[in-house]
Length: 182
Image 1: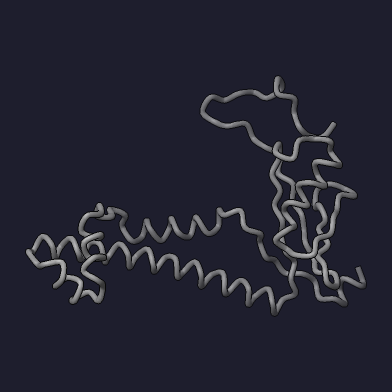
Image 2 (image 1 turned 90 degrees about the vertical axis):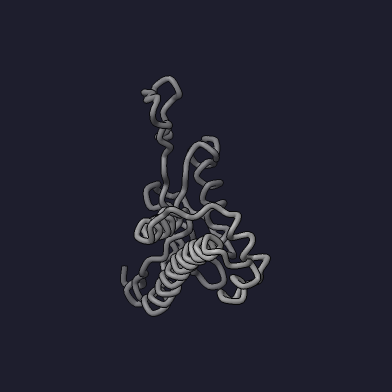
């Protein structure tokens, strides 16, 4: 049995979609390629040249080994990196999330400012000059709905989006001498 339930065996909750099996994989650099191994399925592994190919190949090898449709389950690939590099990658990802948050906040504040200036009777050309944007952009912002998200909610939404994304995770890998001993 593949771990997949037959359609008739699934108890249907009208409020929830049926759960799909999730298979976890670890990817480790091996010379010029990546070795991708299933964490929860014995003897299921593959090799890829580039890390961006790992999810597709993990899905293909899982479907082949379990004899199931590749679209019937999810895979999650974790790239295992040695500590100095892992920390640098994690720091870069955190900074990118912070940047997205700041961009969202800036857009919300810009739109609110344009709406306030329009309400106070300023021309679009004056608004553009005051805010350092073109009068055309001021016009676009004036026509757009005022964002009603408060900044705390926006921050939570951006951070939630960053952690819920199906991107590959990056985790620490044991140093080479520990792997050789294991």
